[in-house]
Image (cartoon, rainbow, N blue to C red; front, side, top):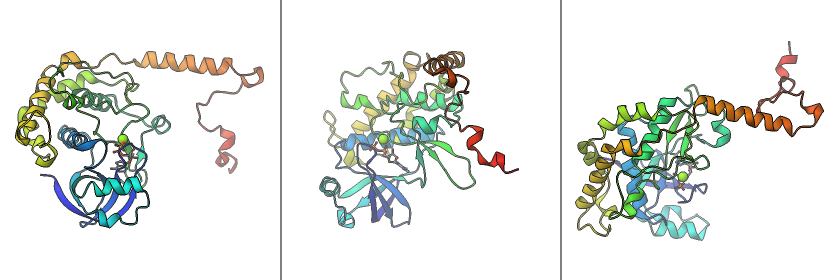
Length: 304
Ligand SMILES: Nc1ncnc2c1ncn2[C@@H]1O[C@H](COP(=O)(O)OP(=O)(O)O)[C@@H](O)[C@H]1O
Ligand SMILES: [Mg+2]
């Protein structure tokens, strides 16, 4: 079961994404990113957050703890923005919280440039996204975080934000569980992801039993207004049935056609050549350091 906490202090809204989650402190002294039931994305986004996030965790991927947060809008009385205040008052009651990773950085193209990702880890993440039809893990909106960024533990990749996954729950009747996944803009597509190894490792783990345990974590209230289903239990069964059918059809949606190391190297060489071409003659002798500081900028070399 997801733990339950009560928000005791409102800290700030997070405006970088689309759903304007809020950061709160709770009665267990933890800090959480709260996704509100009253947001424009609606409760389905929260259902997707729970199912995909807990599936990621069950498959061994790094994903912060989820909790149910009791939220009283009165604690955020000093929030100045009217639209955020309205979001809060539409969200009194139980909302979804995610453990806040202090100091975490979004995996932006700039951060990504200096961050190694193991091909098997990249393969596992893309595999999960393809299984759960997550359309929101692209180069420019990676929904991946690098954490920790200080202290003694080396930084690792963490998954966040699965609100835009499970797109099939917007069209239950016409959605085909064997449909291919569009991975062209995936944030990890250029990391030579080993999706074949990920499929062999992860597909057998996604059993109906696991899917039932995961969908049981979704509060009834978020499933009850799902058209076409009389009860929350029926809606849970639809998620279990769809995801189980999809995992068995992995051969038809498994993305494999990623650029190889050689293709990436050739692309990089072409890019470097183009940069060189556009330079005046005197600059052509300056090595292309791809953003790394030249030795002259590193003052330590002059300090004996
Ligand atoms: N658990 C977390 N710890 C630290 N920062 C987070 C966490 N979750 C989200 N954030 C920050 O908030 C931003 C928006 O959160 P996200 O879950 O992606 O919501 P949205 O649905 O608005 O895109 C993220 O890009 C990230 O910068
Ligand atoms: Mg996001």
